[in-house]
Length: 526
Ligand code: MSP
Image 1 (cartoon, rainbow, N blue to C red):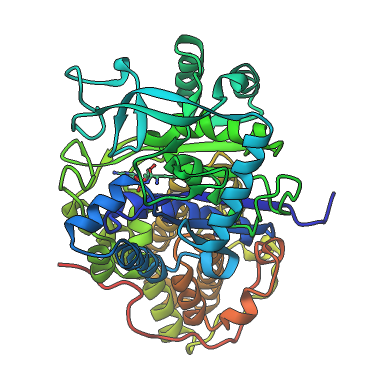
Image 2 (cartoon, protein in one colour):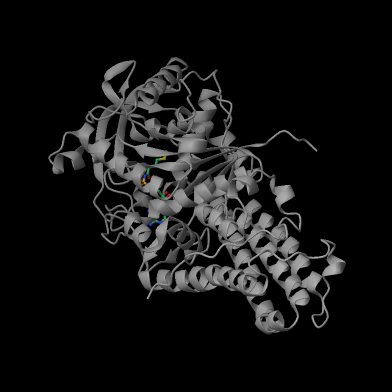
């Protein structure tokens, strides 16, 4: 076994600052954060990156519409994103970073990298003629359009561009990239998305692409011709490197490079599976290991998006359910990788059933019984040996608890390695409902009044299971973890000191420790 920590670098897309964040952006960011926290929990060396994409005509126009100076405008919206991510305890600030493409560290590195590509002939002077959607900031082919001249994602008319430009030699990399994607050297998940990309390569192929705009002033000037600014995606993609402190010199590969997972939704997969890895090949840098694509949040069947006008702000969710509640609801809202509808009624119902009545109520039941029948202390059980925990009248206490907790851990880890955080949550729920059923099946409140020794064994098992559930929820609800442990009489700072391997060993709770009663973990919403 190699004891050296593995590295885990995960990225979110950098979001456009033409408008404030909504639940779609929040979903991606929270999903990346739960993955980052899981990997940190299992001992990996983690870097989490997110940020804002601030250049281009779309943003320049939006600032103008608002009668704001463009710098002030982007500062304001970028701060909104950071504020929302801070409220949700997104871990970029303690195990990663937030990058803004208007920062000098980014601009200088982009210029250096583009100069390198120009010097080696991968960027060359030419002209571009074709369709462009400003909403996507992407070039479109006739086949991409609906109703003849509209962008399928934005529903707005595309514009015809015919201008002098600098081109990127994208076509030169098509063969290599297709092979890498087919062989999973650049893995695209889920597999349907991989297949879509492969057919795109096979049916449409890659043509050289315009990499600069003469008419767009709000962008990074090309170092070899300052009358042009860099195409906003050429600028934006490099954030994944500059966020690690990269200086633009292709020879200086950052230690955390390449990403293990780049998370995004399907709207931007094609550019991430074509232009982006081609830029990396041109720079001589390793490709990301995996592009992971999740579905869209829909409202009544339509994508949640500012252009449709059906957005919910993260603050609305946080004000109602708190940070942990919101993180939980986002991660359990839809099947990871599929589109799904979200609405307030469903959020309320899930909050009540899974958090208030689920975890919160179980904790409350166990703590109250310990308080009432065990003098408020974690019961002392004779031995941690599972055979000793067999109790008259219950067929297999060890099987009911010990087997299941270990088994749930196995399923839990499998869900994460398949990149299915929503499934990891379902396994936790399974364990919670198992505990509830157990309490009801043995009528624990009755046993507690009749036979303290027998009740002690049940209550110990339940409390110990809750300690371990505290660990399982770390990626999703980091603050609730501490609270669960406090109720159980543990000191969170000490509990977290252990490695996960040690924490998973049965018997971590020491008999005699006083439990704490307190306000409900999650209050019901009416
Ligand atoms: N700036 C580019 C990305 C550059 S990365 C080098 C961009 N920005 S964006 O603000 O439009 O963000 C798109 C991403 O936001 C999606 O890929 C997805 O991660 C997230 N989402 C935006 N709306 C969403 C939903 N309705 N549902 C789920 N995720 C959504 O594209």
